[in-house]
Image 1 (cartoon, rainbow, N blue to C red):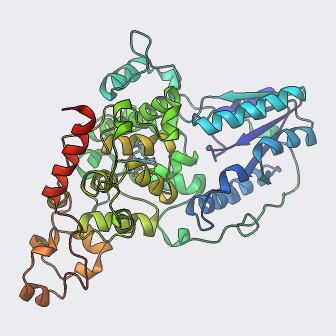
Image 2 (cartoon, rainbow, N blue to C red):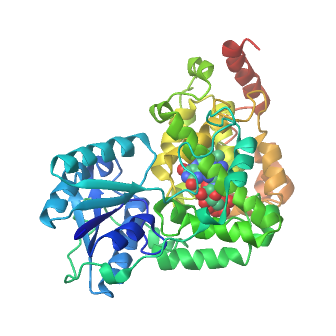
Length: 470
Ligand SMILES: Cc1cc2nc3c(=O)[nH]c(=O)nc-3n(C[C@H](O)[C@H](O)[C@H](O)COP(=O)(O)OP(=O)(O)OC[C@H]3O[C@@H](n4cnc5c(N)ncnc54)[C@H](O)[C@@H]3O)c2cc1C
């Protein structure tokens, strides 16, 4: 093969990369491209940390290619049109890419593939962002798994060193070309966010630093991961989402490192693949359907003002509000808090989980359709292997257990900074004298609770019973 195009999407790195591995072996000249796809960008807010993360990561990737005498071709428009056009412009024999399992991406790739085929070219796609994809891990009866633990066991059973091997890239076949222009964020129609003020590092180099930092903490992951005030999790989700790290590199390390911390962390990577295969087998989930069909019929009350109060961190429940401020300010939310905030929206505020899912989708820097939908349906008890519907998180107990001293709460709710730990989880219980003493006037400095948890809990049970008959 003479010329190949490698089309980057959620794989923004130049090492251990399946499509680059195959292209740089099969072609003598490899052109690397990225499309800012208007079919995706059109619906995003003009201030979007993800677009900026991609943009800064591409700037770094472009310089890496330029160090090899090549460059990155970056275009802005509809990928379904631009990829076939670029293939013609570079007289490429084929386009190489890594597979994406989201329904819209599958449809887009099919359209691009058809056009290329009509033009006498091929689209070659590879597994890259997961260890096992699609039908690779099935039950003994050949069915997709709907429960995590047997999926995980089958996943681990199937694992051999082959699946963890890196895909090396032959840099000498990169097409030589002068440095190419790249549209600015403004030219793409976006404005700068606060990304550079956040601890999130971008590009392969930033990903490598974050990963190295986590390797020094992985042994304590199992104990530390549940406490949002401490640095327990890896903070790698954005890098896993955009492929600034290779999943094989992470899984290989976690698998061979051993110990409870690494094993638990590997399980989280397997949860990610579990939800990826769930979405691939059940694409209707992307269209708002519940995994358990019965729960489509729940008539969510969506009381006036509840959703807005949740989004704006005004529920009066400090842990929930601190979590929502973390999301709004940083684009990240700790996993324990995602569960608490999601469960609160659904089971205390009685708001349709799809609204919360959409809000997270818009604000999370690591937004991933499969993981987000899986997490929301787990929290709403409508999903596969979900929290049973009658198990309802108590937001005060969660707060006492996972942020006992209120350190996380105080980080994001400075208005509660003077409160002693014993009052911080339910500040509405303060007497007027205590409110004066601690400079927190409920209803003035901080809202009263939007609902009474025990009453709200009863309403939720009735809602679920209305469709389960239970
Ligand atoms: C309501 C809800 C929504 C969520 N939305 C997303 C989302 O849009 N994108 C996303 O990547 N994760 C999502 N998660 C899963 C999880 O909260 C994040 O992956 C995690 O908080 C990211 O932080 P980390 O990289 O520091 O996590 P770590 O604890 O270090 O986990 C390592 C990696 O494992 C994967 N992972 C961990 N937990 C899960 C999980 N429960 N499901 C799937 N993958 C997991 C992620 O890739 C994560 O980066 C959601 C969870 C819930 C409850």
